Structure formats: structure tokens, C-alpha cells
Image (cartoon, rainbow, N blue to C red; front, side, top):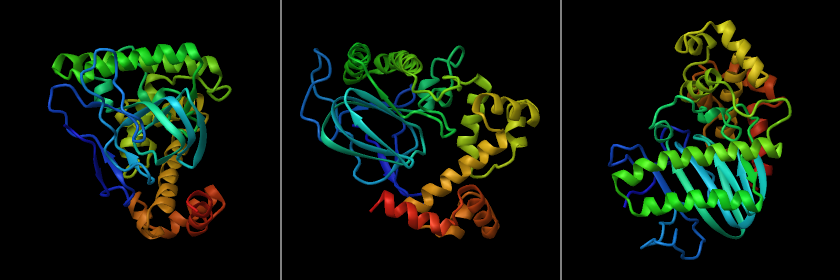
Amino acid sequence: MNRIKGNREGEGNIPVHSLPHSDTSTPSIHIYRFKNEAHHEAGSGSLRPLPVTPLPTNLYHRHNYYEILFFEEGQGFHEIDFHTFPFQSPCVHFLAPGTVHLLSPAKECRGYILTFTEDHYNFHGTDGKPALTGMPFFKKDGMHEAALSLEAKNQVYLKNILDNMAEDYLNSDELNKFVSSPYLQIFLQKCCHISLKSGTVPSGLPGITTHLIGQFQELVEKHFRKQHEVKFYAEALAVTPDYLSKMAKKHLEITAGEYIINKILLEAKRLLVFSSLSSKEIAYHINIEDPSYFGRLFKRKTGLTPHEYRISVRKSTID
């Protein structure tokens, strides 16, 4: 059986969970059940149970893939990038690559854990699809809503989709892996619709950003550690830096440059709290050659030095 892999390389020693390379022509998608979940079958015709998510989940960690947690039963707390989400089933939680999180159940959780890559989502093409980073719950601008509560009718609707996905997954062959991508698209579109109707998207912000801004966010996510200039992203998108900043201001309420800086600082905060790297090492990790400049930038944006931030947030988050 293919299993998710863990490593501590390249991410400032924060544990990183990775999906295995797909052994088929379809990019990776995997479906699991929760670790504390009692044995159950997925779908009425299943011949065997879904596997349990294989890696340790009792420590802060992150993934290099997208993850959706569908809670049919259970409650507790989910810490996602310095935000604590108390949850009560039924609900859905969403995790983008790079997000640091820790799930702390208070009651046994039952449901589905869906893991997939951006390549899997785009397997059938991108025409007419919103970018993953443009969806309300995967946005990279700090304005996302990572937890979505469900009414009974929406729980049934989404569970039916996941039941069918799980059934095909368990009867794993090339055809069934191929059809999982349309299931995923329908699931995410329904979640977008629920999110917009429920008003969980911050007031005044569109639920789904334009294709250009979605592409910009995806590029920043891939390159922000090395590329800090708006010009780099504008050239990659074949627009001018001024136009990109105006579009970012319209759809994200901050300029393109501010968006990049916020992403860099979020990564710095993650490493300060969840890794043992020094401030100097963190500066190099995010390609800031002058550690003193990093310290000044961090204090200007947060009001605290990196050391002060590490002490204050670790005390409240970890202790």
C-alpha cells in the first residue's frame, strides 16, 4: 500500500508529510479515516475498510499537499497557522500546503480525510475552474476560513460524494482513480457555495478570486522563499507590476508587494514557533541575507522582535 511519507528536510525542521509518487498516470489522491476512528466500511459495497492516516498527527506538522477533513462525528480543537478553531461535527476543515496545524480531538472523530495534489485537481484541465488558492478556504492571504460548519442537508450531500469517491478508491484501478478528479471538483464547488451562502467569507471580499490572482497566489506559494520582487511574478504572468498590484489591491485588499511580504513573515512566524532555527538561520531560509534587516522588518510588521515573538507565542501556543 502506498503511504504518506514524513520528513524534516527543507522546511526548517518542522515535520512535513508528503504523498507518495503515483504509480499510475493520474496524479496522487488518497482517502483515509481518522486514527481514533472505529472500524467501518466506506460505501455499501466495500470489501475492505479505508486505511488509517499513517503518520503521527499528535505533533505540529505540515503537508506539501492539500488536505480536507470531513467530520461526521467528533469535536475538539484544530490549530491552523496560529488560529484555533473549536469544532463540532458535522463540519469540514481545509488545509493548504505549507500550513502548520495540530488536531486535538475531545471526542472520537469519524469521517474522511482526503489528500490530493494540485496536479490531481488540474488533471482534467484548468478551463472554467477556480484556482485552489482562490477558493475561500484555501486562500493564501490570511483571510481564509479554514473551517466550514454544515447543516444536515449539506452534510448528506457532501457525504454522498465522499462515499462514492471512497468506493472507487477501494476498488482501486486506473479508471476509478481517473474519475476521482470530477468528484473532487464537485465537492469543492459545493463547499464554495456553502461558504458564500453562510457568510463565512469576510465581508466585502469576493468568495473566489480571479484566475490571475489565483495564479499569482500559487506562484507566490511556490517561490516566495527565493523571489521577493513583484516584477518576478508579473513577468511570469505576462502583466506589468503595476497592473498586478492593482488587481491584488482590488481582490485581496493589499498590494502584490504587501502580499509577498505577508507570506514571507508568516513563514518566519511558523519557523520561530515550531522549529529550533535561530533568527539568523530563518532569515537565510527565506532568502534575506541581512539578519538585521529581517529583524527590523519583522518588528515593523509585528511590533515584536523575532526573539520576543518566539517567546510570547510559544508560551500561549505550545505550553
